[in-house]
Amino acid sequence: MSYSETTVLQTSAPQTPVLQSPALNLSADSTQKVNYAKNDQNVITQLFAEQMPAVRTGFFNIHLSQGVVVSPHWHTNAAELVFLISGEIQTSVFNPFTQLLMTYRLKPGQVSQFPMGWFHWLVALTDHTHLLTIFDVPTPDIVYAGDFLRMLPPEVAARAYCVNPAAYAQAVAPIQKPVILGPPPGCSPAAGAVQGAAAQVGYPHAGVQSAASPGPMYPGTMPGVMPQSGMPQQQGAAAVPYPPGSGWR
Image (cartoon, rainbow, N blue to C red):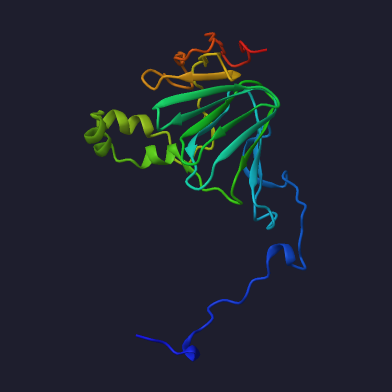
């Protein structure tokens, strides 16, 4: 089938480029748009294209108290850079190529990156922790692991992983809605420790965990396994029953 020029329809009006718009605004307040609030000490605000259309990146402005975790998740369309302003955090990201869990302990001014599609989370190790999570797109997509866990039928978990379906159903039953900042209200996890391997390779605050025995992030312990290389290394047991006590000062 062929069409003459007169049959071609314009389906949308020409759009004025953002930077040429008479309503151009190059300023915004990242504290005004609340994304999620757990309480007064644990709040996520944001600045994305919705607040400033000209922005080509976006970020969450996050305040956390000791022991609160930004729950495990991944982004289907964006890489993420964590920049710590105050306090201390531990970030963890699963490397799908090496099958290793990479864990980093950050102090103010330090950064950690999560490549696009990589599974990750972070834990605040001190009160009054403040950080930015900066994305390379105006608005990131987010997939929460909690949503996957609560939606996975127990019989599928049993068939795929040989997990007792009744035990699985009981384990995920408390996840009734997306958990953004954990633990959920009413939950009192047992006091645990997050242990990081203080690998002196490139960045002294970096640690790499083995996927074979990472242990639970919260609560519990996470034994560090040192990467094999010819560079000098130091294994540190950065014991944290939440709060800080990093081997890197």
